Length: 443
Length: 95
Image (cartoon, rainbow over all chains, first blue to last red; front, side):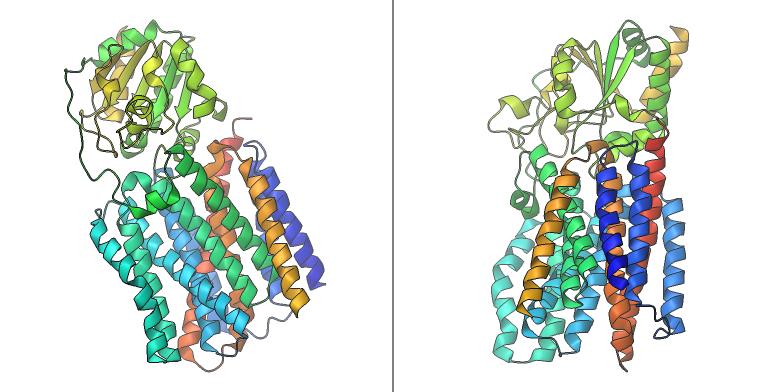
């Protein structure tokens, strides 16, 4: 009976992934996955609920209620933090279970190594995720890479140390501590705009930790579900790395953009006013908006929606060009725009829209910088050389809404800003858009 | 014993492969709910906690550690599915 329940559960998980492939069916995928999870958890009890005391049930009920509360309260701009936190919880739970199993010291040798692996990965994910959340909240600045390099250099002798001591009990806690420190140090050196990679990578690790926990307790469904999460995280990690033309190792090394190289401009940008932008837009037939992290920081999504409505009322075509690493996690911009009811059919990926810029009248760059920097195509010495960018500079006219000329994450100047077809509107993303919308009423 | 371990490895490999194939087809626009949904699914480790909880024995420390794992995993499952549902509702509206 249990086997049949588990079979149904596994099939439902995979079927849910299939349904997730299209925005219109994805909400059903969630229902299927919930059902699969309920069956899987139910099967673990093996029809015997008497083995569990009140502490067990109270923990489940309280944390379940807390989960509902958090998920209802969280704002969409905070999704990177929430996913980061949940990555940590997932890793921490699997790591803790591995630790308990190891403490029993009745494990066969093969399970022993899997359990060590699960504990190390789980604890690394836990501490690394907490640091990632602190960074996303702006509570922690970048740590110098030297510390991480010293730690990495000393890691092999540190791992071998317990073998010299020959003390087994101590070495378990010792390995746990090492994994926790490794997680902290590794994530602490990685900068803010690399967070999409870090979050996706930790997501994958939380799945791998769960999968290996499945090996310890001999649960096939745990292995399958863990493997699915691991695969999903790896895919996203590789996509994010490809979108920056960097390797995962290079991202994890940290310290990107900390050297300020050439960020001087040899001429002044052309500055514009909200009124002029409104006039410029009202003569356009096609507009592409390029949102970036600045839009999320300024909470400008509603203003974007309002401007979109204004433009569409004037029969101007509006599209959104979303770079894979825009924001702080994969798909971050899409969710923010969907929340204000912007149609997902109007959101385009880099590959789908890059050929359209040259025939577009006006492009509005809203809080994006490195992902529209043409140096990625031309300057071989640039740290972002080879990164796929949105070819905004090829559009007929470009309006950049940005507070100052300060460089983006890569720490380099963006020649787009002084391009002949570009004008700067120096403003906060939200305020700038609201002023443009107001000016429309006067046009 | 050997055969079961190999069979488990085979299942692991197949699950990873199916996962990789299906998830590769998920569009960029759904990557955030994909991650929060993954969070929920990684809470499946609750199964391991349920399996080992009755066998933990007398140690209060180990019991508290398992209860912590249960709390984390339940938070992930409930919170993860709930927030994913909230996000996917936003994408549904467009039909």
